[in-house]
Image (cartoon, rainbow, N blue to C red; front, top):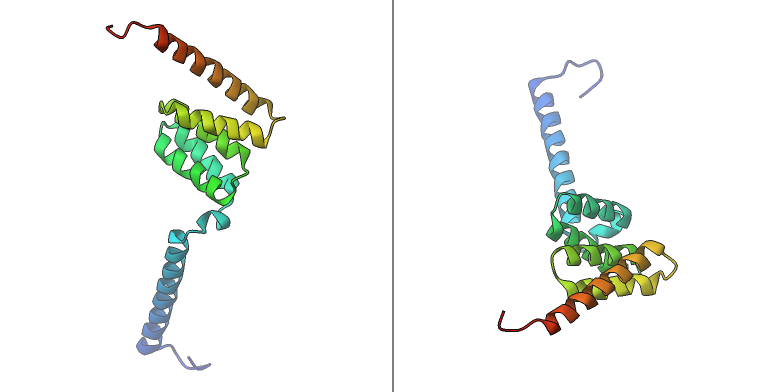
Length: 140
């Protein structure tokens, strides 16, 4: 629009079209970013972990597991994600997977008391449950 000239219907239409195209372009770019494999790089692992924790607190274990597995894909040395996966797998009754994740968390961060405690408690209960199953009469 030229200075001093009143805005016409055509000018307004052109401005609206430009805004629409700009918004469309932004949505397309954002949409591509959301679907890309490196999403967790742009969204910090801390945010991914927090979302996983919130999901777990709501009982959405599959969602939480998906988040923590994604963190581990990007950062295999993230002890917190491994520990959280252990908790999630234990909650879902996937005890072999839980044991592996707890063990990994402790191996990665042996000084962390929470990880050590989770691993020790789980291992003790897991071994007790195994011994109980071995001594039960199979006909029951």
